[in-house]
Image (cartoon, rainbow, N blue to C red; front, top):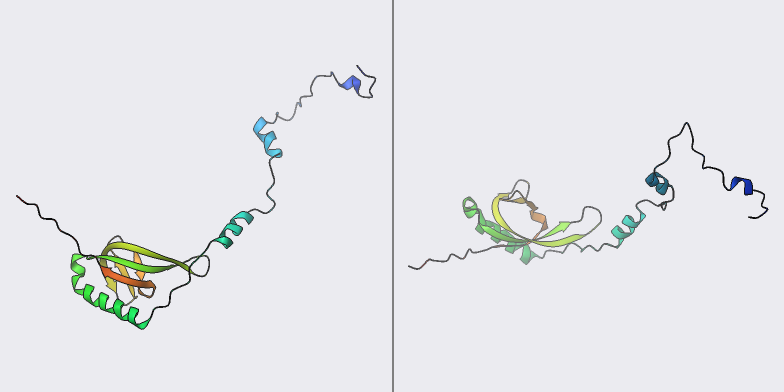
Length: 144
């Protein structure tokens, strides 16, 4: 071979420590994994880019229509009428929210806390309701 300064070390047996156990291949690989200096930064960027809708303004006509729909549904609560509710769901993290549509059976009109309670325990605040309508059930008759 060559006349290098460290040629005498080249063919020595590999050193094994008598006091420390040999590190596993996985533990050794972790030493060289990429370092994330800004943990959570990508999540913050994604959250900032997420779009929300502004809360729609309700006109007097829409409020009157909602009141009329609630008055019409009140006597039918024992039968749990099927309703379609279009409402604004505020975003928990930033201003705005989204407009959602929900179909379900109405269980209670809570006038004290101003909310609707559905049979599946979902609660919709009345101030968030944009449109409320009863869905007429279509009954089919079996002909003999």
